[in-house]
Length: 296
Length: 85
Image 1: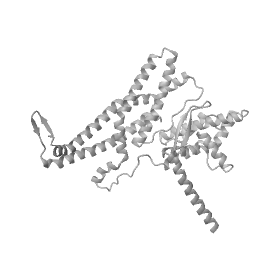
Image 2 (image 1 turned 180 degrees about the vertical axis):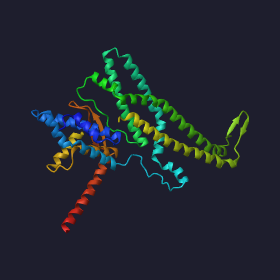
Image 3 (image 1 turned 135 degrees about the horizontal axis):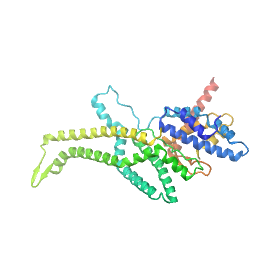
Image 4 (image 1 turned 30 degrees about the vertical axis):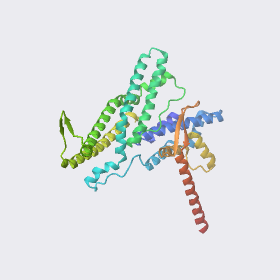
């Protein structure tokens, strides 16, 4: 017989071993929310019954850990991952596979992620530096403890938010629910739990590194796309508006007209290669985000 | 409504013939939310961890109308088939 909610959660986690880490986190958060809400409701209605008997009633209705685990596994198996599409067939020609990147939502999502990561990276970095500085400097005061708890809890919230962005734009399953603190635990216990949680420290490192990564991603994408657009536009601008491609003092250099297709082709190649590069970086980043933001 | 309330409501509707465990409801809610048919927000609770409240979206309402129509057609077909048999 299961004697506590914690024991149920441990058994559920064991039943879900081998499943996606994000699914496990969601299942644990859902089970904890439901079991505690049901226990509180039954306790109010039947105060004479012992806690263990109430929990048995609740689990009878909610389902045993293996039944619950099966339900999650079944729904996850049937759910199509976001941004999924038919992968390029090996039989498709190299040319077709090369161009198929334009039809891949993951490539477009990765490009958008790389562009916005500059903004999110700066926001994360600012919050991390501010939070760490204030937590350390206020540690001598009682309210410093409250701020430190707030800061470490905010990291869990940020991890959930970043997870939603990663899932939405990079198409990798991330948690949809954050894990809770048990009601009644003291502020000091919460701080201790957070400081000894490897996941919180990994999230801290992730958010710290997001700014340099965001700068690199943004610079790379903007530079390559600008180069590509510049190459494709130069011969057209020259022929329509009469602007020279290079102007040094009074010297003006114009492209011979036969180079126009060459410039268009090279520009298009760079654009397509940038799409491939963006997609690959997006997939690598998604794996890195999952490792750092989702507890095993 | 939050998850436990929805589970209790389903239990009341199903009466003695409970067709699913309450734990099987949550992955379905995730799936509906992921498909944009539901939206949810977390609110603090006085008696336990914060609760996630679910609300149907406009897309969800449109899909519900379609599902109801499909269900009626299916029910009507099955009724006719049974009567015919």
